Length: 255
Image 1 (cartoon, one colour):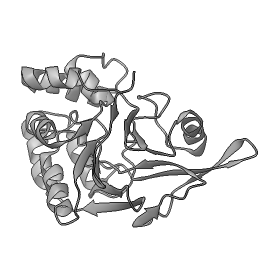
Image 2 (cartoon, one colour):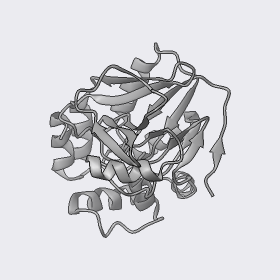
Image 3 (tube, helix red, strand yellow):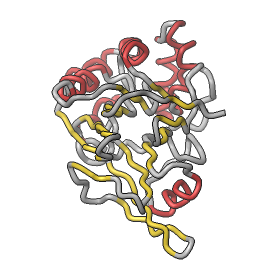
Image 4 (cartoon, one colour):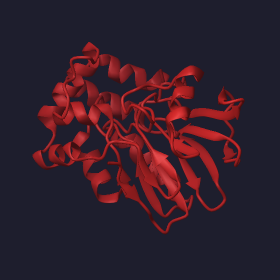
């Protein structure tokens, strides 16, 4: 059963796909500090790929108000196998399993799966109908919109900031992908939304900067942000820990 979280808050800092990237997380937190918010929501994939799983997990445990699990959280905690991952992801998952403190492993094992309701919007990692399903394209988003129980759903998993807007037309959804992402987006009553704050720790939309968003549930406006961080330090850590070089190099390209 989906767990419902109701809080007397107005502005939510929404983070996803931190992937054990301590430098990116801290850059986001510094940037968001001046943008008033009352609660922090995390859409999963706290660990995997990056070099600081214990530090990042400890921070999320201490500071995030609502957290759902991602596929890497499951794989790195032993909740699921990582056989379906590519070789690079398998290597990082194996390393992370060995590196995680027992208390963090147990916490990751007990995370909620999405969708989780917060006020009048949902949180998922992959898609409303399947926590591990990717939504890159309109037809994938349409299936998610049909299944979604709320007008607004925040998702992660793709590492691409943006999302989809659907409008019901003769019993089917006309779905538009947000190609030109506005800095601010108002949630309009007669449409449905699947919105991705982007990846904090490993962006894959061609922009290497860490990504996040803030949602104001009073004005129903979502604000999208990007912030520079110290990529070189993270790359050095990845290489020093013997993790695959690809994980270091891709951070600079945002791919």
